[in-house]
Image (cartoon, rainbow, N blue to C red; front, top):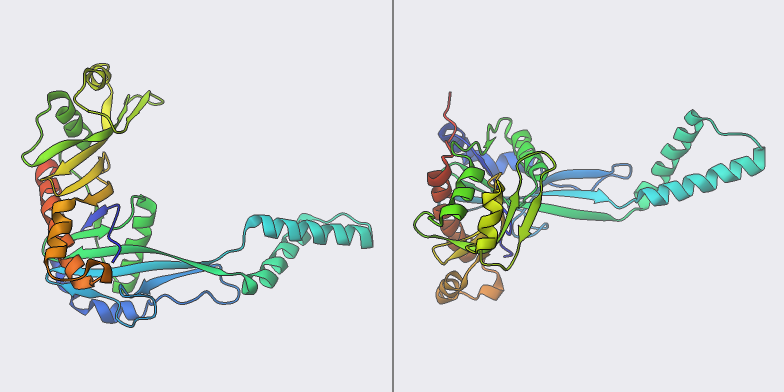
Length: 305
């Protein structure tokens, strides 16, 4: 399977975790379908094994894998605009009159009705897994908007799913800036080779470093001038590298060679895309990282009150 490259996190309570036992049946009523003739888009769930497969969830231990998807018709505004212009021109030449705004809108609606059924469709999906024991929702996107839409679809399917975005007790920006200034990172964590430093003032200066030693005097001078770390490249226990944002979104996630070697040593063919082996190994790796994020920044799990 193609593994997640970006992570946006939400968290849910222990009571909510217990409600996930009937997840499969509830998702089935919200399975993705192709947009109807006059629909611009639809959204729903598809199987982790592929769109044409029946099962909508896959569980290994305390982790449940699922996929949310959107299917939308490809009808660019330029195509609608060109067709509208052509029809307006034809009316002007034939009847010699100006077209009012109401008639213009009616013509545009007619064009949509005519063209939509013939438009191709395109599907986009967002991978997600639920860590039942620790209460994390892990979404394969760095976009908060896409993540919110995916969680909203889960709420719609389940009737209630009170998962909340991360609300760290310790400021990630302050912590990451402190790590850069003093070079003292938590055990198992080392600096990567990229960061984004910003003056916190509105419209302040922005410095982006890539493929650069972050312990140089040049970087420290930017910090001395008051800039703060809004994103920081990190490596965790020589097993996972990533860029952490001040919003706690994890970007550019990559499992390092030692993890890949363990995957191959499991006796399964990685190229065959064995879902169980890949999912089990990588969710356990990420669970350790998520627990450390909780430890470093304080990510309280919602209570049932």
